[in-house]
Image (cartoon, rainbow over all chains, first blue to last red):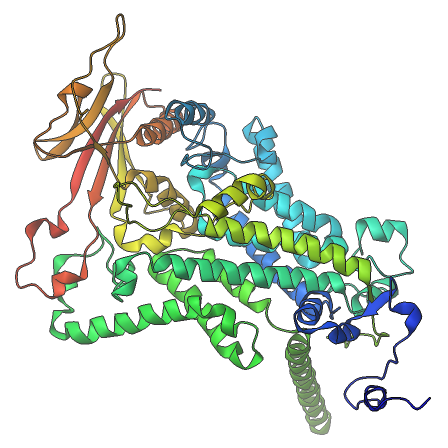
Length: 394
Length: 244
């Protein structure tokens, strides 16, 4: 039987990817290569490609390193010296206040979601003395450092999420930046729990506890096999971070449109001129060039809105990386200097860095590696020439 | 940085795609529905009540999303407070610590200017609840107490010697000729708690709590010829003394 024309076309190997002829036995319950899913229709193909294409896990490792650094910095800078005040049973919000809040919520007939004070779970509630709290804190810092360095990441990623959730459980001190830290630590936990689980030669201990050391220090042959293998878990974890961040930024951008001052383009005036810190003379100092000043504020305010509301449109496009990362860096500087919010900026930047592809990370590290090798060669050459000169002088 | 070891193409089992897709769709669906189920805007509906969230989203969130998102700590709808910038007045609290004879020991400010930015920020979060007073509404008609019971009592602010002081009356005596405002129960809850903490750490017998409050400075100050005198006015509200 003469094959149809369409069969001939599809059976031709393309120069872009290895030719993989369809096999009837695999078409049912068997494994489906990611690129085969392309034949299954636009939406399904897109979904499968987006979520289920195994990737080089380098991006997951970099996000882990940066998140770990942020968690360590956040723990040390926020809680060192203020541990009892912030989290102690006799702290700013003590146990009696927790009890009063529960009673008040019931008395006012509020649901838990309506109450401004709805405590969540925390392992720190088990610490009944200042010493126990202190031990728990320093143990948490140690775990976060291990997670940052990639020591037993399967275990330390779970513990890090529990730590972040526990240290942010007090509703009186709850802050929007904490939510971003919770998102990052949760999806990193998911990623590291599943990372390498499909490696066939993995022993039970490795499967349960993960590699002893992950990137950048994991160098054993077994770890290298796991790390070098394209990972489905890395892709799923990073995609979850990306989609969740896109939802957060879009939602926050749309929420801004509920307030007239954002529409009027003057919302950024308020953090620049906070009450108590701004005198009448300071405010009026802008009066001679009020129009220019307010126009600039308009542009900046609308730029914030455009970046947030347009985020899902450009975040996944490689050409728009400068807008994605530039916006995140400007946002970091603005939130830290103008609003005085230390955590939200770096967390947002890490979230935006999750959009960077493994190839881009490899390119960045390749450049850094070449530069380091070049510097080392230059130093070696300089040392050689110095020793030659010294020998000649002798 | 070493290059990855070349590996053969990885095949993903079909069952894994199905299970993974279901999990992802459920998780992100719950997060998305929670965001949509948020209360809309600062505007009110025809009856003057705050506009309610979309009913379908709210029901879906309550049915399955809330119980799933709460334990994993993703139950916030990301309608963040920072978006409400203009509505946020400046507030700081002053705690005057006193001994048993009533003499001043020291004074503590919240947020503390000497604390580092991270701690100062956490302190400022405690003050969010002190930013806006509640309007105290008089009843439509006079309320008569049940036999053996007292009438509910209400506290509202009254200006006295340049400071707002609390005046406690029963609900029938709330002024009807002008709107009156007073602190919420939540403010007292946190003020008392912080006062207990300070008494313990400083060995004080009681603490007088003062709230310093200034409305947000609006950009119209650049347009008008004469800026109103109260645009930069600081108002002090005295919550009274608390003992542990």
